[in-house]
Length: 197
Image (cartoon, rainbow, N blue to C red; front, side, top):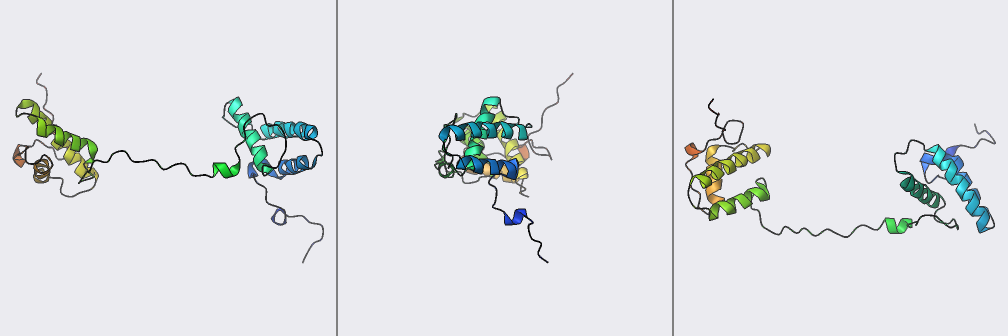
């Protein structure tokens, strides 16, 4: 059964910005047909006032909000509206241009990604340190972080033997630690000494 005279949205032309509704879209289309630039300018300013009232919930600052409204007006007119815009309007084609590719600046090689760049910096620092209590403390701290990294990545080999082996491997054999000497707890990380009262 076909009813004459009924106008459904499915048969109408698509609106460009659904947030403002079909009525404002029709006002924009009417504005496009006005003969003089002065008439179009005045009509466009009225449309902006209506658009502003139609979206009172906007959290943007007043200046930014007005720039967005004017851009939306240009967008709804398919950038065909010949008026003096109070804000610069970027054409849709230029906005669709993808940004330039960001060049990754870290070119240093990391053989094991789950340890991350900072741990490899620690390995390099440990290689240059002379033996003593400061290096021993840093070895314990580094070993604790290594165990946490292994556990965070879900690797089953987060034990003392693996940590000691990797310490020797990534410090080019400078740091040789007996796995039993590593003070790591079951949750990962080095054990903290309790303060005596």
